[in-house]
Image 1: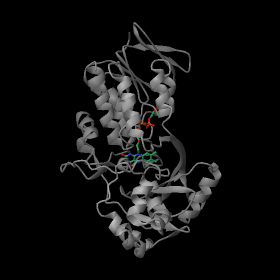
Image 2: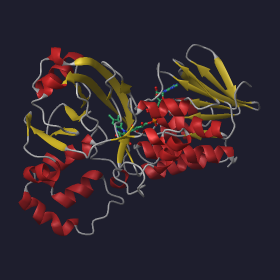
Image 3: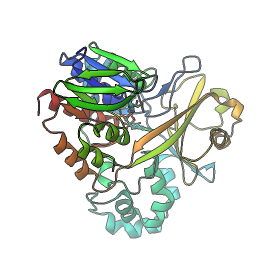
Image 4: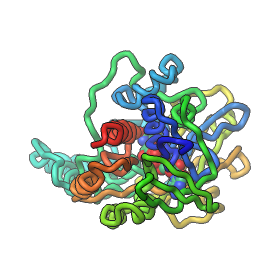
Length: 401
Ligand SMILES: Cc1cc2nc3c(=O)[nH]c(=O)nc-3n(C[C@H](O)[C@H](O)[C@H](O)COP(=O)(O)OP(=O)(O)OC[C@H]3O[C@@H](n4cnc5c(N)ncnc54)[C@H](O)[C@@H]3O)c2cc1C
């Protein structure tokens, strides 16, 4: 066989797994259906060397498993510090004065907040949905109007039914790394560097269609009809795609995985000449209390003298033209001011209560097989959750456990 390991999916989960396998001396073939690696790490590098993110934008000093890869790849000294976050709100399309906690308090009904205080003290997220946990803490009215939209801006989908303990996690921070960082050129560079490690061969435009196994190992069939074989395979694709591929090798696991819900987000990013956007105060996130989008993420935490970048994460159902018009309208610009407008359609997992148990059952089915399954639908959606899962999955299959 030409390779020891085939990794299907070139997002951060697949590329970090490929990196770990190659570091262990294995020959790795990484198959990615799009024309670039990165998945949700999607940096648009235009115009004039400026870049903006269509997907993930921030890594933190608490991302230890990711930092292990960053350091092994020699990227540590090039980390680009991001400025402190400035969260601002949009109400009825207009900017609410102030930022962060001050702006949030201005929007909340303080009477309701005070009445909820006794319930907030000692409230634990375990076994609760985001809605039940946080509406108990701030009151249902405050949740519906303000806190719900803020929490939905984080995963770019309604977070109401999420298991509350999955949304925010405490992880130890490293003091020697910027608290919030990216890479010069954007986060896509993280996946590109991991997939570019010695020992990894990348094939883009290569969608896996089916997976089978015989005494000689695994066979991956690609959409173009070609086939690749290896003794070990790692699936690093969204849940529905993983279920499809698992069907040929572990049908019971496939039917469990097909129960993981998915959400869709339509992102539109663009650059604006800084002079044309001078009326917009610096911000990291703009969160609408009620609109057709979950959030606007800006490039302001990594300022550029000539350009500013904005990415709107829209709820599904709008046309491209409607998204463009709404984005320009919200920012007080003309559609002609938006340079390098680029769209991205993303499928994200949408976990509900019982997700942890479902994933534990999938893990029991994978135990003892040379098949790794990773992705943002195991421990959580954060890049660090992906890096942790991929490191652990590679260690498991390498050890034959
Ligand atoms: C808008 C947005 C903002 C975010 N912001 C942050 C943030 O700031 N910080 C943070 O920590 N996290 C953030 N996240 C979450 C994080 O970016 C993702 O959860 C993570 O990058 C997912 O990585 P992944 O490799 O598991 O999946 P993906 O990135 O979805 O990668 C899966 C890959 O598999 C490929 N694929 C699918 N099917 C096939 C097939 N059949 N054959 C071959 N390839 C296939 C896809 O093309 C894709 O490249 C954000 C996510 C989004 C959408």
